[in-house]
Length: 591
Image 1 (tube, rainbow, N blue to C red):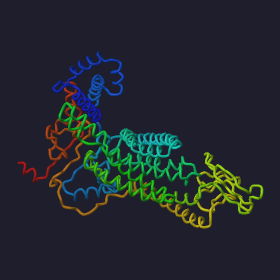
Image 2: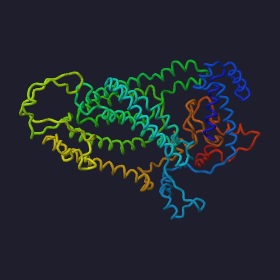
Image 3: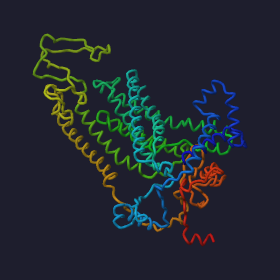
Image 4: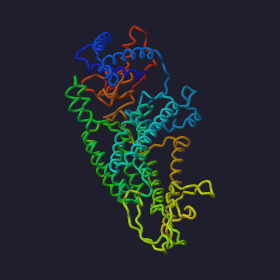
């Protein structure tokens, strides 16, 4: 019901922006205007209506929504979530301590109506609650997240294929392609996340963080490792080192240039705003560009992961990482003050998620890839047989083309030179041995070299032995981190634990108070739409104030009452109930 009412308000708002000021928005007037416009449409206008709905399409959808709302308004649903705001912090802590564990509460006899054991927990901030998704079942949410994650994996594969094709043509272009894909994917990731149902904005941002991070980490660090030929790892041209440098350059220049340009913001402020038909519509054009906290976190972590992934073969990556983060800091600070839209108070969930899982994952990736690169040196797939010499038949001076690129080199061979032969130094691409079905590739140590194709020096043996087992230790520690995180979230979740001391400040004494009033944000409204009756809600309980319109203007229950007038009674359980008991001193002050 709430989603239908919000969509109806948005359609009415779009219609209001399309018609002349003062035009009536009743159904008959809109239907007449829609029929007249559709009658004079030509082929091109009909094709454009498929991409951008016009007046007839908006009116048609509005009629459907009106009928749907009339049907849903007669239904009553049971209460699933109750939000309580306490006057004192001590009372809140007492209730959470007693009811946070439903088993203990049931043992103590603290049952709702002597039957149901309530599970109390401390909620997120009021402006982060997604009221329209509170009743979605867990199975539905899991199915939605699986489908969106699968779509993310498909996007990673498609972009990786494109980058592979471009990389074969030009390394610099592929690096800029990776940077541009990293800029564009958050838009696609946001569209995917909008199909998901989340109880709070924090969990939605966490889901978006996972998708963007997965795409950017794979697209930035992993893809170029896969598409670059092993023998060209240390090459001057078309090699992995040159690609890493080009990628850092592209990330520093492209990402920040697009952010500072703020093309969409300039179009909105300088093109759309002067052509707005109302003051409110013009104000919407000056709200600023929407920013996602998850996208900003992944923008930082992808650069850090790129540096840690390749720091063993390209130590300058750490310096380039510092430069990139320094520039990103000042670019973000400028955008925060000048161009970005104000964000809700999301709390520390994303930072905790990033600190708990990303940094251990990045450190583990550094240990494993450093072990791999140290073990794979010198990246030429050539091994030496010291027990056999070349002999007189191959001695002399030869003209060879080692990379089959037309660039010939002169090679002098003595009869006493040892025999060199092709072997596999890439631990990720070993062939199966005849003696065993599965090769021992990990850890990347000298003992796991193919028998008869050893290439490591004595010093290299010692270094890889240390790095190999360090990588094993990091993997074990990372597995413990994942296991403890899953246990703490699903199996061994602790009860409520107070943080800090009771400040002794009453809720009613806080100047900027806000309560848990059901509200839904809309991109075409300057203020949230209220999904409850505002009749008995004190104005001071709202965290926002429209200087031009009263709170009743944003009351969605008024819309339902208008549509149900003369048809049927509005169900009492159709909307959430908001009840406020002011403290005694405030009641006396009002009297």
